[in-house]
Length: 65
Image (cartoon, rainbow, N blue to C red):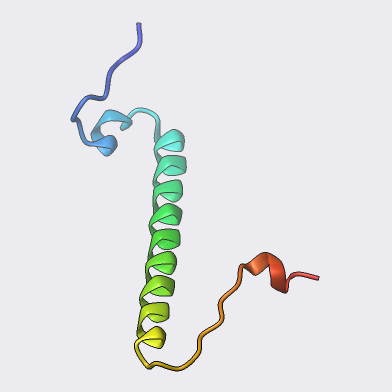
C-alpha cells in the first residue's frame, strides 16, 4: 500500500525516510537557485535594453568551443 502525501508537509511525510528527504530538499534548493539565476538574467537584460544602447545576447552554447 502506497501512502499519499496530499497536502502534508514533506518533512513530516518523510520523517521515517531521512535519506530520501535529504535528497529531495537538496534538489529543491538547487531548483530555487537555478530559478533565481534565470530571473536575475532576465531582469538584467531588461535594464540593459532600457539604456537604448545596442544589446547582443547569445546562448552559452555559442561561447563553448
